[in-house]
Image 1 (tube, rainbow, N blue to C red):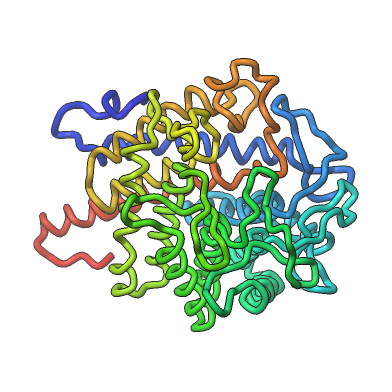
Image 2: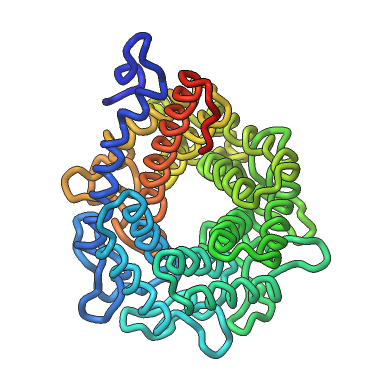
Length: 438
């Protein structure tokens, strides 16, 4: 089904029926993503996973291996195994690939001397860059927690807790709150905080705080202790009070240590990603009063993306530049993936049909321009933006793994199925007059 209009006949069909009818498509695309990573990502010569694979699926065997990519691979195959298990499908292959990722990580990325993980390795597994980006340590926690939930592996949970305590001990600003962007290998202060060359050299960033919040949510699922709950609560509070701007529905991207905003624009992709990750964090924490306090930011972020960030084909645009006063029109794979989940979450939580239409429009765009129907997986940039496929960035690389689009497929499938289940129970309740306990 190519659009919501095409997917929804006139009454008595509903938006819910139409979106649920799309589930087989998402299942098909999830299988395609998983199959591509199984077939093209393994480093058979040096262990673990390759550092880079071209847009034409050609391995670049001597490419460096990044911790973010490897933590995301660990997370993806762990969650894929959990997803299949919950659906009653075989999970052995996903579990084996998650185990491969964990074993390689423990042997090569884990810093046995100082704790935490190295930033990058060469293709042989030798340490290349040892700095500790808080963002990267958070993704390690995210992967460890999911792997523990899949396998019960005690070392994975132990490592998740160790990395968590390292962040809390060495990366938290004790005076003003929040997390510093980066530290040295030994967790001492650094002068260059940047995650990548395109970033400002800011000591505090939206991206770091968002993914610490995300990782702590995952850790709390695996280990619901008071220690983790307190840290998750603090991460939510700092994010909402200092990063989120309730007045305009955008996120402050780069900040000084005292939280002064030095951003150069808005990121529509991060706005919509944060809207659902924040909602998830509040739900997992389970404090209703706390959730009521910060849910308005969830809605403000979704509203601003729908209002300001949509391109002429229904895609979510990358960002708005304060200097040029222009929207950046390119489409990157991760933005569209996060928009799927974000718009679906907004529709489910507000009932506003505009979000269902936005969800379907993004999905139509992804199928037309983001998915590589010839060589598999998704393109880094939409084919609409790069008519010459050879101009594309890698299919697998330092900043592109199976995490965004793989997660989006699993989230959408699970959310739509839960919505259908709840609706079925509600209908049964109305028909029988008896209370249904879900």
